[in-house]
Amino acid sequence: MRLLVVEKDETLNDLITKALHESKYKTDEAFNVKDAMYFLDIRHYDLVIIDTNFGLSEVFKFIDYAKDLYPFIKIVVISDDPSIETEIKVLKMGADDFIRKPLNFDLLITRVNVALRSGKETHIKIKDLIIIKDEEKIIYKDKESFLKGKAFEVFTYLARYPNQVISKEQLLDAIWEEPELVTPNVIEVAINQIRQKVDKVFKIDTIKTIRRRGYKFSYPKE
Image (tube, rainbow, N blue to C red):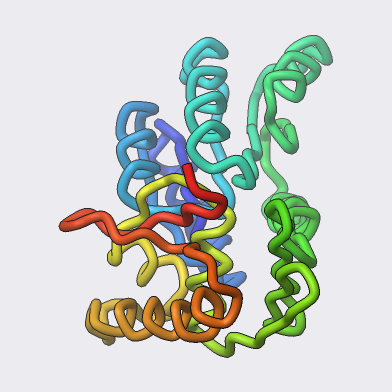
């Protein structure tokens, strides 16, 4: 899983990042909201930690942008504001958790783990198509098929973001532990397996190739 830390205080940003690394999370750092939004455009994150020291209006703008782009993304807001009113506002705006500073890093990691765990769905249902994650099984009406390994992960990832164009680089970064060690051709292999094991079996079209940009999940047809 990859996390994004959005914190203008470089020392605190580094401390949060270090704590996340020690818990085996991959992270990126942003020091302003504009850069954080740019990171979201080029890379998928499972969770973002953002500080209210950017101002609540900027934080709310970021939450809206992130949730619109990736509906399943988790947002943890940290703040030195002691008021309960601010916490309520932030949670109502779509944040998944609110943690006050000074940070206890053990507590922060625990809350991050809980937020990520609560976001794990066991299956995805889109019309008549059901993806069973634990079994790597796809059900369509009265038929079922199995798609194994990375091909299943690619299929599931695309299905979570229907009608969004996802580049090969984004898929590599989201699914492979060390994306720099594999070539983009592995994505083409996975897409071919999806078309053989899903589209051909069920006689439907699920993945559309967008030339020079990537792929998108397009079932049911737009």
